[in-house]
Image (tube, rainbow, N blue to C red):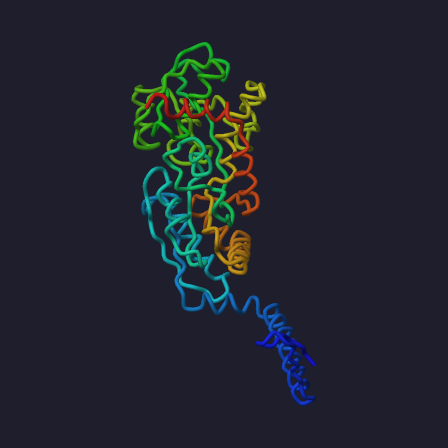
Length: 366
């Protein structure tokens, strides 16, 4: 029996018959069994639900570079293999979104693209730190997306024409040389600028060249004496010949450890010893470990995020994909999403004094 309060303030009695009680008990038991079955089905059909979602859908790759650029070529090659490892095997479409060094694409991924797992972003490594330095780029925060990983790492080295008389790293502080560069905030300008400021190098930096080909042409014409090149860039095309015939020298590896192709070249660890200055250099060097980072919007459902991360892991382990990338001239050196997140966390732990120094380096002369 259940007692309650009547409308007149007196007590009322509601009597439940045995039949009613048995009926309600049965309903509760069925509900409990259905709940247990639902949980069991959720666990056993976890992969199947992802497969059902992606079946017949299109996966859009937002690429933060123009069609035909290395980033675009890599993204298209990656997409061809990647979709085969996603349950349901969606169709891949590349959408090129250019502007502001990749920041337009990054901001679009964070705030405008669907967060259901049908869009991934091929972003730029500078997207990891530029929002820290430039308040105008606050539409993207690398902590507010989920990272799948990165396909390669980037290494830089400083090179010079032998005719300049600057043929060793020690010569950088003794003789003046002119350095070609592309954009003012690009790595091929900021890294030499750091050396001028904290190593005492005597480089005069000339930004504004459209790309590596124009810089090398300027070096051969005598307009400039050298530049900061990627290590990959030194192992293909004209630079190979220039190094082989002795017309060009590799002076300094712009990292803490010299890579295998140039292991005899000195690196920054021999010259930069102050912990505070190292912290500043790391703000620019750490993103090199995530040379081509790939992300999805923050609120992608966990099961689809897990599926995309698994597909990424399987793609980078696929011998055919590895061979295709090597054949294309873009060998992979990947890291997973958790490694990218650790890089972002370290960047956002940079002390404010170093951030302010970096801002002055990038923006003060614009």
